Image (tube, rainbow, N blue to C red; front, side):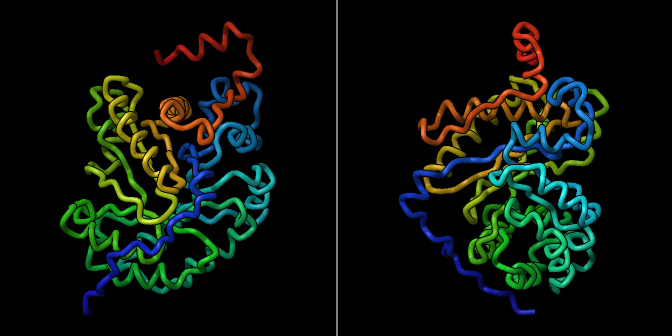
Length: 317
């Protein structure tokens, strides 16, 4: 098949002044229903059915990993819609039978059915993203182009590549980025280097190292809502330099009218809310007042006395 020539220009329109002035960022975690958060992030007596409601009181976005493994029932989707404010954004993944089918199928019918099912959440959906397997490389760009170009334009989309060629600055990455720019599809950036630099030998860290890709990410904003997924243990000497670097990138994106997402991951995600809050504090310190996002108390903190709350804030140094 003849290789398609993708435009090297960014087709995302330059933001108007009013958009520039309103540009900000979003913060989230890999999931909202994490039982170990009870008593630390959630209130001690919070029931699982109320996890999303309490989560959305603090974070304004979340990764929808649940849809990677299966499509929720319509009544579940409606319950989710009823528990979040209009300002919230779900970033759902396309199911794995779409993203990981071999060979990749450019026919978008399965994706269209998925989007139709998720439609009750349309007003609170951020980019829907396609996480591709490591085997899907540059030879599949034509199929990926057809797939994204035939999806409805009233949704936003993103792609997280895993093939090594897509991380080569002068290789497949340039062609992939050009394609994503032409289609106004965001590139998901997965920052795993602080995880692999960790010296912790606990089971969660070792398991995470066995599952996560070990790659050096490229900084690329191919549309208006770049997504950074960063995974690390809370080891200040290791993760602080990465938070400094990426907060500077976010400042630059925001100044240029982008609305980036930061998704906080830790090996077992128990400390993900704390990582998210640390990044938010750092980023806010670098932004103009009009672009700062409020740092909200966790639900568990609002039911505790001041002394206990202060002790909790000091848990991670």
